[in-house]
Image (cartoon, rainbow, N blue to C red; front, side):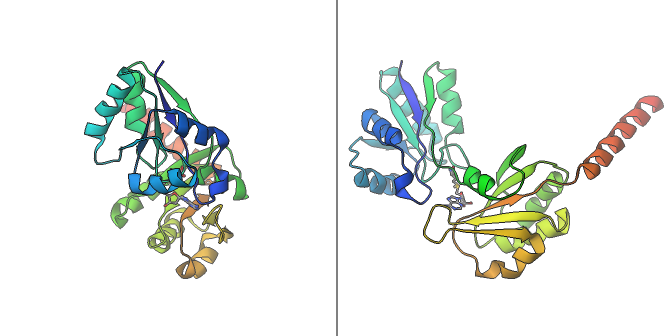
Length: 243
Ligand code: SAM
């Protein structure tokens, strides 16, 4: 059965690219890559000579039918993004759904992911957890998202860019209160750094922080959540009685 393989690529350290991932990229007929100029460097490094096609967030209307046709023709295709898992804050989810709908196989290859690396090293209760990914870029929407997340009692994982981290942590402090967080930067790279503490403490040093980063935030207190739940039940009961 023609198959779409989901192949995670290293988030920093090339030695974390698995033997299986490399073999799959060598064996498939085509590699669909988020940025072929980026992926070619990885392919050259591992002497992978499979032809590539482009699949990114702005060409899915062309790329998805093209990949489906490749599968129809009996070819196997691997999907890669610039780093980590495809479909995790990267293009891929729409393609996976289309391939499933067409009745072809989808096979995941295990491997690198910034969110899970950050979660396990954070020192914050690892489960249950919510993966949120990127917040909106504009402050108004970001604030709304954080307000909606305030009562999540599970550990929550956010991706953030270094030039937005200060604003994001300030809003978190304002909305969540001074919770414990872990800011995990440059994971698997030479300058990997895990900074654990209260939001206010990390805000004090955030100006100096550069590189790729993940923020792991401890969950809100159960009591707040129960209060909100009770309020919403009371509102529903009152509405019901009023009818
Ligand atoms: N698909 C990727 C994955 O599975 O982790 C995520 C891609 S997303 C476009 C890029 C974001 O992931 C970065 O802005 C950062 O928040 C996080 N990230 C990627 N590599 C990282 C690293 N080495 N250290 C810390 N965060 C990283």
